Amino acid sequence: MSSPGVLITGSYQDPQEECNEQTSLLSGSQASSPTLNESQTLSPSNMPLENPLPWRAVSIILILNGLQPLAFELVFPFINQMILETGIVTDPERVGFYSGTIESLFAVMSFIFVLPCSSISDRYGRKPVVLISIFVLAISTALFGFSKSFWFMIMTRAIGGIASASWSTMKVMLGEITDKTNQGRAIAAFGIAFKLGQILGQPVGGLMSHPERYSNMFNNRFWNTYPYALPCLFSGSIAFLGATAGIFLLQETKPNRKRESDTVSEYGSTYSEEQISAKSKSSNSWLSILTPEVSSLMFSTFAMTLVSETLFALYPLFAFTPVEYGGLGLDEGGIGAHMAARSIFCIFLIAAFAPMQRHIGTLKTYELSMQAWPLCCLFFPLLNLLKRWEVSALVMNSALAVFFTIWGFAHNAWSASTLMINDAAPSAESLAAINGLAQMVIVLPEAISPAFVNSLFAWTISNDVLQGYLTYVVLFGLCFMAAVHSTTLKEVTHDWRENSKYQDSR
Image 1 (cartoon, helix red, strand yellow):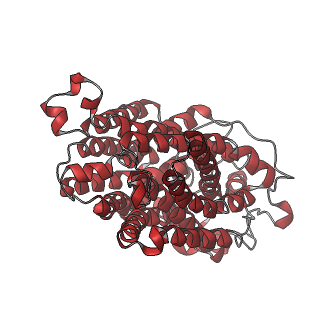
Image 2 (cartoon, rainbow, N blue to C red):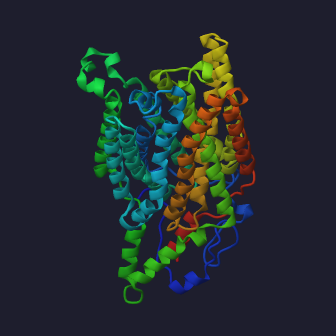
Image 3 (cartoon, rainbow, N blue to C red):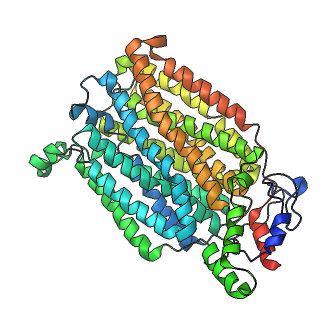
């Protein structure tokens, strides 16, 4: 791909010279390529002018990224009611155990298949992995609406989770078509696209459930038998159409295949394709990636995802739970509206990420965002108390607006984390490997958090532990520790994009 924003290129290097290169990721110097020392780090004061983004290539990636929430988060507004109506349980206090399992399974399967997807995308290209995954995601989403048993829910969510493992591939594609001056805008747009998907997916899940309530056209045997089929069919169809459009519009961004074939034709009389392939593999080995600095970054990403996904998984159950049991007592439509409102607040605050990141730097933006998570935990008991006190709608909505604003600001930690992970790659060839590792670090807490927090919430409410507030005490402790750890991270002191350009010029 050729565009002003594409700075990821490469050229062949003598295998003997590879032995002399230092593979340290965030510290040290390289004998054969330039690195940034402390004085040269791209801080806000010496950041170069921003290069234009290749919007045609970026836009289709953003659209496909927006399809992910249609599958993963579509079920959140209605999953608890669906479990009750299918007869899996009859006691609302026990719903959390089952909904947590279903929500976690999606991430469990994604965790298992992240590295295979990363490896396949390195071998066969990014485009086929992304498009096939979205097609599978569309089918599994549509089938979920026809679930009449717990095991069918498990099966369809497992298939969707396998397909969602390609999400990191889209982040790799963004990294391959942007540079350090414009990646902040691209990642912010990536987050906004995801939130737009949530704005569509979550209300669709809540408002299209039980369509017979809104129109006699749906008051027939089919829709009465499958009251959750309409939102799943709608979202699955959009994902299917998006993947179909991607066949014609999505461009392959992986540079290695073309680069290696060009190198073989140029140096074929001296070096074999196997030697060149071995060089590429050595540059993205886990040993060259897992430096102490990167390990600390991965741990912080794990902690950030754990607190983020825990709060996200808890809110629908909290909103569904009757007021007397510690919740808000909302129906599916109300839950969907709340989640959509939260996403709208997130979009406005994510839009401010790029200028904030350029002004104070990626690391500082990340630290400030992480410090907002403990504040979010305080609003769960506060909102329940306001409901119990039967305050006016103005007071309640004002409290929700403040809550969603703080939550939206905290969500900027995702964008900052993505930038730091991309910047931490030692080379263009290792970008997929480090993103695959990061995706495993992300989906592991995604798998743990729904089952953990929903089960903890159900147990706390059932046993009236700390008057039902134990869950929020535990969450506050996790958020506080994650915020403190974020202050120990260090700025990246090299730029693999510049190193790649330097190798090309040799």
